[in-house]
Every structure is written in structure tokens, then in C-alpha cells.
Amino acid sequence: MSRPLIAILRGITPPEVEAIGEQLIEAGIDRIEVPLNSPDPLTSIGLLADLLKGRAVVGAGTVLTAQAVADVAGVGGQLIVSPDCNPAVIDATKESGLQSFPGVMTPTESFTALRHGADGLKFFPGNLIGPAGLKALKAVLPPETETYAVGGAAPENFGDWLAAGATGFGIGSGLYQAGFSLEEVATRAGSIVAAFDALRP
Image (cartoon, rainbow, N blue to C red; front, side, top):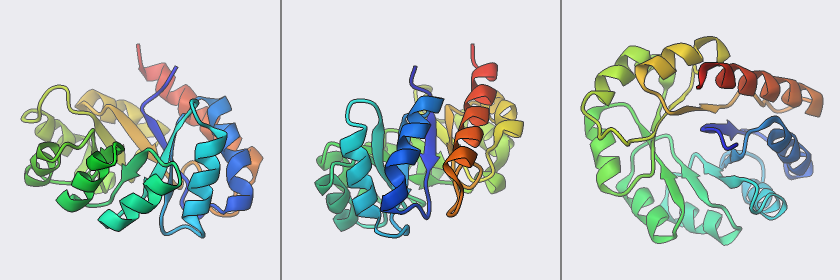
């Protein structure tokens, strides 16, 4: 079962990425982004894309330029996540046949992203927008819009976000931080999946 949970592996390195990727799949998380401000991110993305082909959607976060989209596509990435709403990045993503999840905070950014073909919206930083902010925006967004809370979303507040209309979550430091052991990531991934599943029908 694919869940609307995106693992954000900021700071991960190529030597550890495959083992952690396998652990995430085992826990039930099959959407994985490696932010481009991680060490040697394209190598990590390429390794994950090869290892998890057909089992996960792998891509990049912190994607700020159209050239970066091309770089990610070149190593087999399928997912482009950004902290901002940049139409040039969204356009390049869709032209490359990849999934686009730009960062938004406002109605203007949300509708701009959707007009350019975004597959979903990353509400970031989530701890500033809050469930109340998302609920207000959901009232005017097309009902089929996928909305992901990123930054401040955690198992203890999943319920509040889901009640406000969130589709899913991007989880970063609550799941992985540089230096975490494989066992630590496995434990955290299991807890995140269990918390999410408990709130979904």
C-alpha cells in the first residue's frame, strides 16, 4: 500500500543511502527525496532510483532551477520538490515527465503552481501555516488538489492536519538526520507509518 508520506533525507550520503532506502520501503514509505543541499545528492538519487525501481518514487528536494530538474532526471529521479513556487521549475519538471511538488504558503502561490501543472502542493513551512491556514486554503482549492504539510508535521499532530484536509506529509528531521543509525531510522519510520495508518480509514 502506497502512503502519501515523503521521506526527506537531508544530509544523507551515498554510502548509506541504499540501506536506508530499503529500510524505508520495509517500513511502508515509498516516496523518497534527497535534498540537493545534501552531500553528493545526484549520486544518492541515482543509487536509490536504480535500487528501488518499480518499488518507490525517488527524487530530489530543494530544487531551485530548471537545470537542477534536468540533472535529477538524468540520474533517474522521478520526483521534484521545492521550497518555493517557481513556474520555471514546475514547467521544466512537467516537460521532463516528472512529478512536481512546489512549496507554497499563499493562495497566489497555490494557484500559480496548479496552473503550471503541479501534481501537488507542499505547504511549507507547515509550522507557520498550521492546520487552520491549510483549512482556509482548502476551501478555495480544487477538491482533488493533493496537499502535503512539511515542516512541523509529526505523528502527534497528524490528526489535526488530516482533519484540516491534508493529503499527506513530508517528514525530514523527525525521520532522518545526518548521523542517525539504520536502527534509529527504522524505528522512526515504523512509528510514523503506524501513526498515519491509525488515522486513515
